[in-house]
View 1 (cartoon, rainbow, N blue to C red):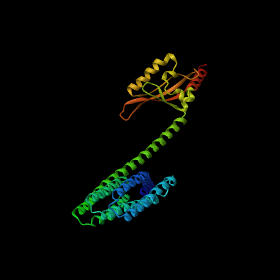
View 2 (view 1 turned 60 degrees about the vertical axis):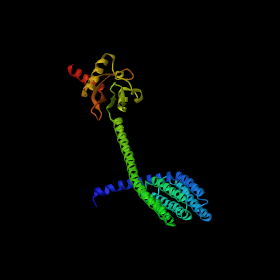
View 3 (view 1 turned 135 degrees about the vertical axis):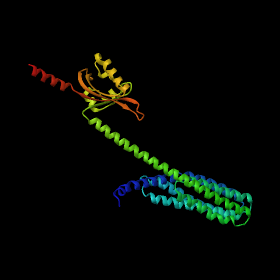
Length: 346
């Protein structure tokens, strides 16, 4: 196997696992609402069909529905309490799919028995409408997992279909055909929605990964700046400090929180302030880089001699957005050079 392929496998595996975990969390997070809505619809269906359906059949179906959705509710609560570390995603997904199949079968049985028990057109239309509504709503909720969606819709249709043929009227046959067309249509729409959801989940993970890499790079740059022996200072267009590293603190005596937002004048003796500020403004206006030396002030008011390197900062559109400077304290170096010069001239 190619080494490049091998190196990609762990990343692809992690990506698939992350996608599966998100799918499971999305499915289970909607379970409680689904149970509540399904229970309300089931109650309405049983109430409307109370006089049309054999009482034994009605009670039996209500018991089946209660058991199936009761187990579904229990699995949801258990999942939220015990799946805190997102372990065993395949197991949880299979449990959800099986419970969804059971729910679909419960509704399919309702379609079969209720349709078989009534010849009234209005009641048949109402039962069909309920099946359509339950199928459509469930497939939108389950669209994130195609298998779950198909298990639910397939079980409803296959079990309820014989109920349409219990009395072979043209209306019953038309309803069966329309239900089939509707399920095919909603399946296609659900599949497309599922693909979009998968793409959004993957984009979300990619954005998180990219942000983590940016933060890691930023942290490495921060560590580098904090440990470099040169002062690194960034200025905005108004020549106010926006970045101040540890070496700058040592050179000038100001802590970072003291220096941030200060104007460049706070580091300059009064007699050269206007001249240096003018030069810095020229660097920004021209978008250029330069090198110079001048006197500076420390926090204690001492005069030191520093060497500066100025570089204009540009954004993605090549617009100057500030000024970056590297600074070294040359005071001791200049003093030693002066002493050597005096010694040589004696």
